[in-house]
Amino acid sequence: MLQPAVTAVPLLIGVFVGAPPLAQEHLGILVGQLTRRTLPVMFLTGALVATVHGLVRWARPFFYSTVDETAPRNSAQPTNAWLINREAIMPDGSRVSSETCDGSTGTWLQYHPSAHLVPIQLVEAGILLALTLLVLTTLFLRIRR
Image 1 (spheres, rainbow, N blue to C red):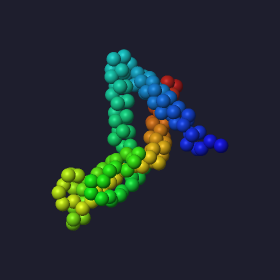
Image 2: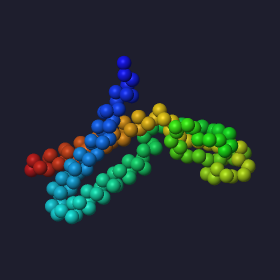
Image 3: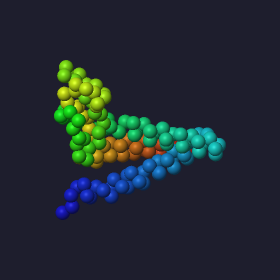
Image 4: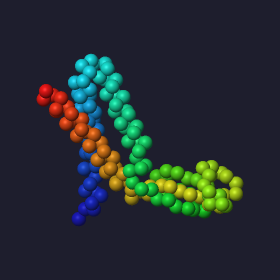
């Protein structure tokens, strides 16, 4: 019997490889319907796609809750983890962003373990699919007129 993660891989590949180019294509058609000029459409579509991808990339660490952990001073990053933040803990309990701070008693780590990869990808795919549906709905309503 296959594991759920193994059977979900083709679905995830289809979502991440197939959906974004399709959404970009339909976004270009929608912008073309609104602008009706070739070069501005190309520029606006590229700018919109870059903006959406930049916003999703910026928001990706917040799609799933992080693990907060204190560790001994100068300890290594957890294996297979996506480190979000690392700060030194001072004797009074405050955190300082410099890891090389003298007098620190430990390290505070904020990270996503490898088990968070699929849930983060599913949230991202859901957001991108919702945006794709919004663009397609707007496009079909616009073409119908």
